[in-house]
Image 1 (cartoon, rainbow, N blue to C red):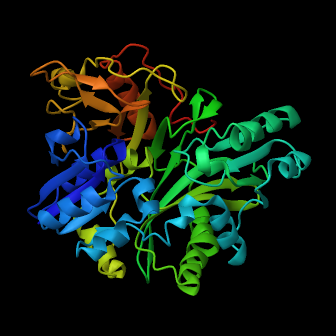
Image 2 (cartoon, rainbow, N blue to C red):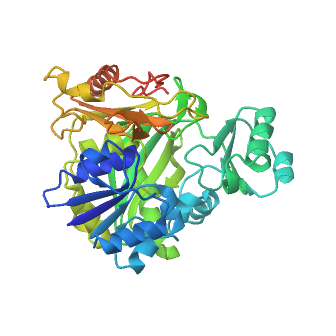
Length: 440
């Protein structure tokens, strides 16, 4: 069976790694991939946003299943286009992808179906918004309506910060067209958590829980990023909370999809705030979370390919998900300057040293991705060096690597992850020291 994974980040590396463990015989391709993915799949030099190129390749190679990783090609309608050339794809169609591509669309959906979320208002005019700063008091949450790589959210502590954020979004247009509309939300207090769900037309099936860390600095300070780390399962989850999420959020969401004619097939990522009043939805995403995937898939005991096919064939109700009882912690190693401007091409050392670890701590091949190991190093923003015949790996993005560890306990997983990352180095490497601590 030929499977094409679209994307080239840490999420896609984790997906490819998990698919490579399938009991089925799979010929794996990835477009465009990265040096870590190249250890496991044929990497194809096609951008994830080159929809024509991906469709041409998938048709020519007779791809049996395309798995779409990033949000941008989903919003561009890649699933619809692949269907036109006869290639089944795992991921929502363009209509459903609006749930991530537009914050306002999602807020309207949540309100219409009485799903708990923060109060909100939409603005398309900068001056009108400036006159309404503090409409929900402070802190004030401002979100660029469109896709902004996880960075289009600002929490303003006062009117001055709010005015500056509005000017950046709607004046300087730092997020481009994504800031043409701004959603202002009530600030929610609580602990953030993430729940990823497989969804087909008839079933919504939650995966194990996870908690992510968006801010760049320890103590949850500094600007938002695409994610600086995650752990699973979330320490804030318990059976009573899971029942409330299922009753108050998951069930009405599926009913809402059906009532609105949204034929969702894929992964629904639900960002949650666990408040004193109960769980509330912060956001919907339409794909595997990044870096949540790097802590969730290492704990999945199912054959991932079987689950993806069940979603695409509307037989998800036949699947029972099974999870390793171990805990997982993923720490992201980022380039200096991220989430602002950052250099590229910095040599990375230590990736080939994982086989030198004590066998009780790690049992890994050179890529750090042996399925039997408790340590996994997922490539996010890496590339091959430019020197002729080089096998050197260099940085190519803001989030460079995700170091994931499994442990018998949560604290054991944290200790393993932080011990492992000390073996890796590139100039200016930054990472949070508090991933896995509940009080962010």
